[in-house]
Length: 288
Image (cartoon, rainbow, N blue to C red; front, side, top):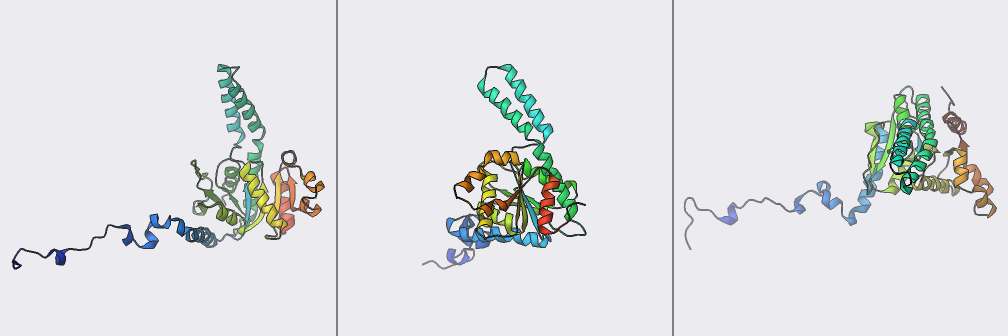
């Protein structure tokens, strides 16, 4: 065996550890590890805790949740969309798809006033309640466009805080620009997002919307009906829409709900009416 001389080295002695395996990454910094199915309970806990801690630090004491369609834009944009659809139809007047697009654009323009109501509601509540540094009845939405944007925008008009609870979806979804940056959250799980909607909620104001809006409305109605949550005022904006959509009396006539269940929600047509209902139920000022 040759002797070790000057300039020679022992591989085993000189080899230095330079781990390249992901196993060496500390668990709390290993993003790939944290995405494993087995780590779902930990992710659920973190998704509950992070928004809760931040809202506490921001002094959020109570909220009003605003739901509604992401497809209902402000009247000026709805009018532009209708004009564009009509221009497209002129290029092929017999095209059934273009005809359908015009009809749809007409309907959205007819419903665009709900955007203005949601914006006014956000402004009215925020200007009334976020005073002297207090954060009561803070507007919270799903963070997207349409009615959600309008409510956050109204709060911004008043120079007040508002919250957006965005969620990752198969298609891209971006938070609207009117959410308070420090109160803009992104969720992975619908269940935790829904929980955060209601943790501080004093009221739920629901504008016309689709599946998502109905899901959130009926889950809250169920929680109230079963006593799992209490002291949340539900206001449905636009009685004609809701009566056309849901046959409330049929549910009662068939014995599928009780007479008292119809008192779990109220109707309003304007921002002022909605706020007066909420204020009456919770003892706050109806206007400022």
